[in-house]
Length: 261
Image 1 (cartoon, one colour):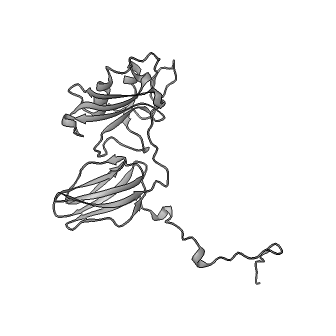
Image 2 (spheres, one colour):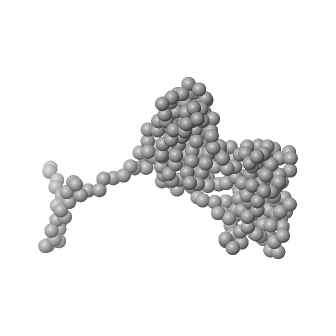
Image 3 (tube, helix red, strand yellow):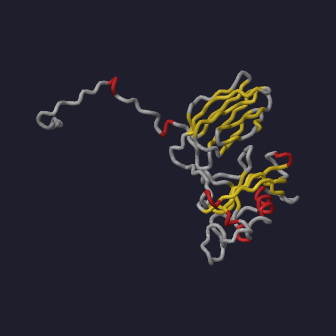
């Protein structure tokens, strides 16, 4: 049996005139954009086979092959991010970067010359959320160059001890961890700007930039270079302050992941 389909058009309506040249070519689908960026450093330059990459839940993933014959470094940069030099041994290394979406430059160090390529980080799954303080601009303060007592082993301890003379007891005991732009972001990711947040996502009361000796981005930690903080978190504030993530009058208990120490 032969079946047909009858197309019905209202009386007097002319058919649409669409030619192939008028059709809009489809852009790359989500499935066509990789979730891992392949980077190859060679003696003659950097090779990046794609123009776009998608982040995963913990940031951008890269598989870096070093074919230069000697240890080298790569760098990832944008207007909002600077990885600093990341060491790559001969062979390969997998690198994770919690860089915000946008236009990036990826570079291989070739004997002191940084050969770079542009890559677009396209967050089609909307994993990334910018971290903002839980208070309006009018209630935000900036503290600078707060000393960290000697012996702070981790960046979390450095932030906690450096903030202690300035903030309320509740805030000093609050959760401190990686700045959560991506859900799975980690403190161990290489960066030229080591930073932590005080409080839980959605109720962050301070963003703390930590530095080592001579403003380096590595331990031993000596200084809280910049602290953006809600004024209610400061010990000198006249307002009562509760631990981030807990309502007033409710004892602070575990909330989310176990706080790092």
